Length: 267
Image (cartoon, rainbow, N blue to C red; front, side):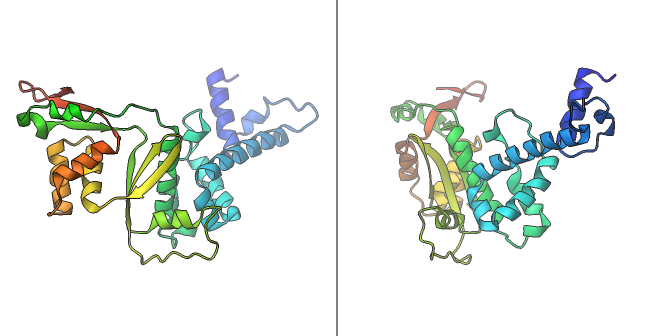
């Protein structure tokens, strides 16, 4: 007799389509054959997870049509089973799956549309945090300002794509003009996604702002982020770019390195 943990593991793999013949001997028929009973549970799991993916990736679904989306989900789910209990947290790796999924590799923009939709989903469910008072930056001594790191709001993320994924997303909203078209030659996008109040919003950033903000989001110092912004646009007004960042209310905390240890600590 298998242990409870072994039984749960075997049942979980069976629900995802893996053959578990020995498990059938442990399922009571009770008017329905064990194999048929297992198929009922398996179908419920597949439908539930497919619907969760569809809720997170509605534009991807619309771009490929629902039948193809369910076909892709049928391949994705057994290879990427849920690792967390909340359904809204499921599907983070779907964009990378689509990138490698042969039947849709000709749709080169599709994985980046999925990345945008995941960023929207992440922003919607992220924790909240109050914005930093701009006066806090003034308190940092001039000789330590370059080493400052700025934490951004938990809902904020950045996405760079060679495709106009922002326009593709907007053209596939329920209230969009059904005759609108998006040229794939229209250029790429550098996008900031965030929650604003109860809504999720995103917008395109200029090259310098994108470089500075994404560098800070990766944990880079202000000096490192400023260098990234200058590489993206040598003529950038760094003071104005930083002022706009703080004014947007997405900076939540500041840390500066200790003069003795050079390790970051709260300011």
